[in-house]
Amino acid sequence: MRKAGVLSILFVVVPLAIAVIAEAQQQTNVPKIGVLSSGSRSVSGPGSRLELIRQGVRELGYVEGKNIIIEYRSAEEKFDRLPALVDELIRLKVDVLVMSSTPAALAAKNVTRTIPIVFIGVSDPVAAGLVDSLARPGANITGFSAISAALAGKRLELLKETVPKLSRVAVLWDPRDPNAAEAWKESQLPAQELGLQLHSMEVSNANKYESAFNEAIKTGSAALAVAGSPLTVSNRKQIADLAAKNRLPAVYHRADFVDNVV
Image 1 (cartoon, rainbow, N blue to C red):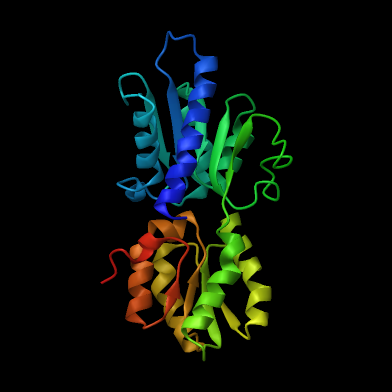
Image 2: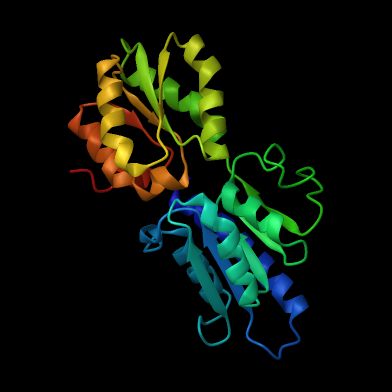
């Protein structure tokens, strides 16, 4: 999702969160938002969702540390830490939880049935079991779905148009992440229609990226498609550098994968 798109979504998420807080608070305590990411803390800088949330609350007249508090936690790609981090945020008495991935949102849903939960970047919240339906989410959870997985076929089409003789594409995805798994699934039929063979690069640890690229090259892959996940986003520079090093035309779901390619 491009920065402008994420920013526009967060400008809706933040007022929603603030509205929930305003109803829950009696103007006696400073409102508190808990933000949980499955990915690395290193992606919490400029342009990150955390920074966009901060920008959004500033636009609404809130000053962090003065009349609003944002508690940020990161699982550093260790999904088993998510429930404990949700517990930690709840102990801090946050008024609303903002979850930036499907695994984080699922962890929050499993931990609390009372604190409002707003999710961002979930490809299919119904299939993931987060909400009953898009029209009526139900319970204490709502948010915004992403279309990254649904565009997996379109990204393959762009690769084929760019490299007409292309026949084999490596797809990098994290099998632990539902969004990435959905993108892999969504790639199958378009690949057949385009006459492409797909090589599955299932990687759930950043230390395995280089060996996964070597294997993809050995199997004859001549291009790369990357499925979005906290792991790939956290390691986007390494991935883009490896693609460039191996001379693989690549397509990503976010522009910032190639902002600092060597």
